[in-house]
Image 1 (cartoon, protein in one colour):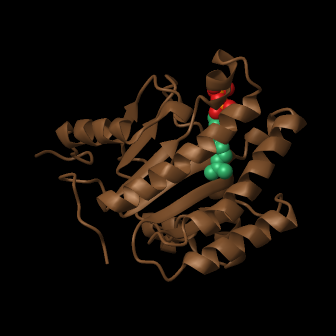
Image 2 (cartoon, rainbow, N blue to C red):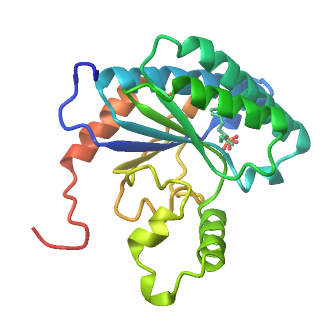
Image 3 (cartoon, rainbow, N blue to C red):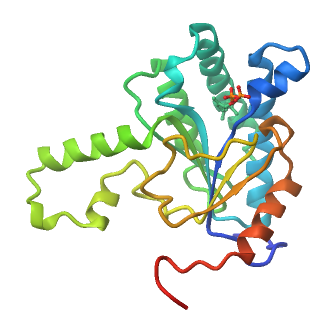
Amino acid sequence: MRKKIEIDNLPNHIAIIMDGNGRWAKKRGLPRSAGHRQGAKVVQDIAIACDKIGLAYLTVYAFSTENWKRPQKEINSLMSLIREFLEDTEKKFDKENIRIQTIGRTDRLDSDIIKGIKRTVQKNKHKTGLTFTLAIDYGSRDEIIHATKKIIDNNISSEKITEDLISSYLFTNQLPDPDLVIRPSGEQRLSNFLMWQASYAELWFSNILWPDFKMKHLKEAIKVYNQRDRRYGGVK
Ligand code: FPP
């Protein structure tokens, strides 16, 4: 059962590019991994809060297909955090009504992470509140290549290619398109995140660094979103 909605006119689906962990750590003289650790804590809190306000879908960019270019030490610390996050979430989300899923490739992830994902997804799949999606080894261009290969392998003829058909081959085929994409940390780009799906999303940027992100920032983004005039290329 969905809980009481405190905020009017919630978007259906919010997607977040969790940026600024490294800068947050640097400002404090800490290793980058400390920023990622704090960022992982924040995302748990935000997911729980989003469920409480009655948001239907939250999708977060946890590791991109380009993040493999980072130093091996940082990749290892991000992978360890994902591992811990999955374990910790199992306990922390036990009493929450949050359904968890992931999008992205799985062939480059360690087998224990894949097992962790399967376990967490399975454990929470009966839940009816927020659908919380972690994008892990996800990139839109890679996703489109993956979808194109599958379409060709399935011998789909060119006249059958429609927007809906392509959407149905993307990792996000169970998700509605995002209405609002949030990127903190001052950068103003999509960085290969949900490029197809966010075609008509509203974008909200803020200078706040992800580890400092609070519910008040999300509420501010929703307020701005509600002042936007979404025309989807048409007129009103
Ligand atoms: C960008 O910050 C963030 C990432 C590369 C990944 C986001 C990861 C987390 C929030 C932690 C792990 C998440 C989960 C769900 C386990 P950056 O390193 O690019 O920051 P910078 O631009 O300040 O250097």
